[in-house]
Image 1 (cartoon, rainbow, N blue to C red):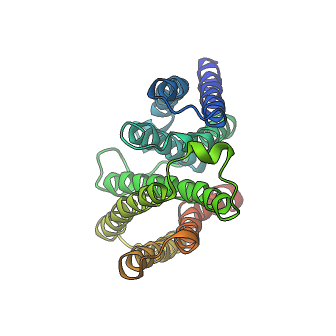
Image 2 (cartoon, rainbow, N blue to C red):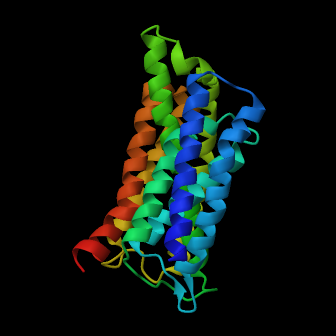
Length: 266
């Protein structure tokens, strides 16, 4: 019962934080005090969420990363990265999208169960799993940033810079943040693939082949995007399309095959 109560409280706090950020954006308030006041419920929600996940994911047998636990963990990491990044970067408004998504993932994790014990604790495979989760989480934030950038670019092109657009950083700053996220996420994804080849017996075994192939395709998409940015100065719609395309392949790689194997086939 206490799990349900604490989980419901965390979900409520995530949603409160998203609402406060939305009101702050609508009213075009940009003070540091208002930022942290709006983020305070999310910080508490993150702590409660993390405490619950500790009991759900870590067990004596190993890491329990069934599909719902995995989604909950990834969204928790996304929210954590976002809250850390706002210390130095103007990314707090991404919480309007990120925090409700985390609340939804947490609700699914509390409602449904699809257990799957992975390797025992302290096994080398844990390094691969943790790097993979970090890479996916960072590139997910980049995808959210790309969506916000799309809205901002569309408003500016149609000469409608009013409303919440005024509260966003300049377009050039938003693009720079996007490529910083993609660059770091790409490095982590490269390490994820490398550790997969090192620690997995066969990355192209029957139950892993779809995930491996889709992950490599996503890696290729982001590599092409970064090369195009460096060589041709890609930006705007081109950068957004490549970012979202790579993210789609990542979603299919990380959760598509897991969903099929754990929920549909079983």
